[in-house]
Image (cartoon, rainbow, N blue to C red; front, side, top):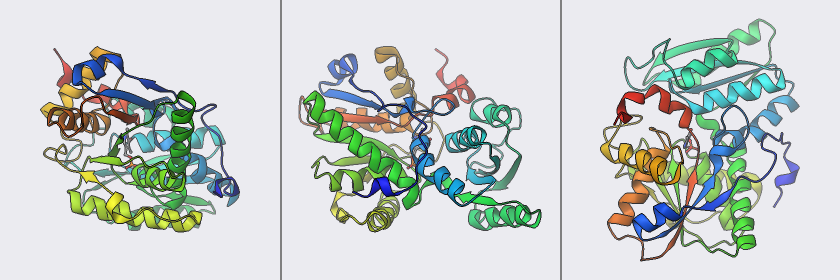
Length: 330
Ligand SMILES: *Cc1c(COP(=O)(O)O)cnc(C)c1O
């Protein structure tokens, strides 16, 4: 693969751990393992760090002085983009989309607190339904008129360049699986802006890994999400010059979204508590809590054969727990 041809910054010194979860496994009658992508580098880690290695390298190659990106009020992506900007000596402007009306609170904890601490140059808040690319262009135009050099990063860092971060992760998983001599029957991952899901599919296909990936949606209905994932799969594979996996390999389950993006469900609360109390692993309320609810739900419904080996990709997000503390009181 041509990964080494793309400029890349390094924010995580070594492969993230891949480890068994024996107590959760006993509880569910499966052999569950976890890929600790909550332990990537930059401020408190998470999946966006891998995408930013490629995106920020591109920004630097283009001589940018300011990163501009977009996310929800508790965006992990915005936290990590800010951290990368700080580390590289760049400025960073955020566009926050109020996906849940009235949900932006200036004094909120969690990631929102960290936006101020790490030092966003500006935070623009817009309502759901706003054309986000347009709004980012407006911010960029204003910076340009001041003689600045903005670099736009789409929501979640999910374009073909960002998705390369998860092609890298797929390679890492294949390597660790071989080194440990542990073969996986399924991989389960949260599916949001699609870069993670699509990058994994492209990387696993290119490595001929033969492991199916089950995406668990956090926002969109199945058909819409699968179309979005497949579009980015296509674009990323073309960009990289590798064959793309076919449409039948894209699965994005929507039974655990609940009432909507970032809105809590009982299954999410149960999954977060279970991972914490059985394994000491901290999930998050918006992404990994729902993905883990999907994993537990599929196990309970008998969708996996007894003893099957399932790899759960932990994409981070625990800093948001502090903005949702009241949900988890005993
Ligand atoms: C952004 C995010 C996801 C979803 O990844 P996408 O690449 O946007 O699909 C999953 N988990 C966490 C914690 C995230 O912040």
